[in-house]
Length: 606
Ligand code: SAM
Image (cartoon, rainbow, N blue to C red; front, side):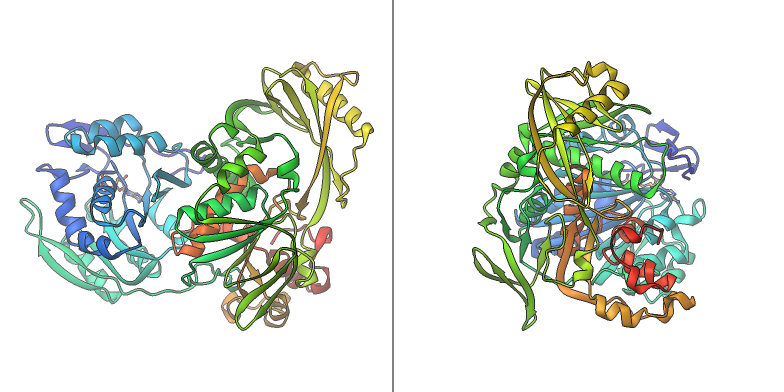
């Protein structure tokens, strides 16, 4: 139902006296008799959600067929009634043909008691583009919408679902939603003890579920329907990625974490973890680029480009925009950006103010200091810092580069790249992003940025101002800049960059073991012949964001936060693999050049 050109089908609906009917499938979205009562009976009660919500600190629902959002709104309403105020609901839903806001609004008019929740949902409703969209219509309620066809969406997903709603259109009209491969993926994505419910009692569906070992019960159906099915999923956890080396660790409960680095990536992560109830200690000296440079430009990328990095940054931008607007108040301002390919959505972030606001949370403790040494002893990370010792089961490095002291091959995965920005008097009307970027910031214009690959030097170099102004004159004439423009101020900072310009986000590989386990990768054996990835337990990387940290920091934080808390990962497997800190090692082992794994020598595809 999706096409490759990044658009999704808009469903054609008939509005009958009984509600919305999808004309393609000739099937209604919910019962003609009382859709909300049907949803409660079939999905909420048959999954025993009221009781299970009462006991849960976190709960995850998976839905095949999001439709009007009725099941989601009713689950949210029930969760608020039964779960504790600190509890967290994750809801992942697959939908090939998302309704428009107007269609959703019209479809749910019969239930005014849902109007408030629906308003919040529609306010956060994402662009109708294929792929993943994580929204948080209310604190503690996260909805991961996967727009696309059911099977490929499930295959790219990683999650531990507690209760499933199978709500595709009727199996005889829409077999794709009820196929054995779909239910195999359901088994893979289920937590132990997961339940399911569906309105259908079709014999084919029942037999398919039973053949996968699901315990299936018939229950009386809603309204004129005699029966429906519900029961227990036989969870069959197996790898989410066919490459064992890119496997992320299975979720182990953690309640506290230490973050190294108090720049934007660290602050976003600290806030995401604290919002999910984790205690966070964040170590830093407030002296990185995020603290020095007055403004960061955050931008999206055109829908027509399908490269890994553009898909990633598009999703990153959508998350960033919602996240900064929610958690950083005035430090973020949406702005239209002119690019060489036309206007784009964007925003200007004032990072120092944003970091202050993000870290102002009762579960976040800031510690002023620098990491001296990090080592694993008695199954815990022992940190020696200038502010005293720390220990933790979970440490996340958010500090531009892997600090020296760990395996030097990790340190060499990224290189520093210093850059200089300048400020001119008077704000420009517009923002621009191309070979340089510029944007208005209070009463001035910020223009950047130069690149000094391999350098961490923070020295201010006047010739770089001239180069930036010349480039602005050529590529952004609307700015009115010229080499003669008077520079009011200069700022410098350095970022960590990798050879493929994507950051390092994910669990930290144990490289000694990787070199043993995957030494003969270049012989071309099948992936299944290799053991799962050896990882340094509880150590995560979220760094080397290069020049686009402000765009990706919120999504990176949501990704690591989801992994630490056992929630659905908000990125498809392919993109998770594209960010994996071990990708350069695998590339070099595949080529049979293990010694060439690091740094700029290794820019080829995985
Ligand atoms: N749960 C919905 C609600 O609360 O309104 C009603 C779901 S409706 C019965 C079925 C949904 O499944 C439709 O929105 C339809 O677009 C979606 N769907 C049908 N085939 C699909 C497929 N192959 N992949 C993903 N979604 C599909």
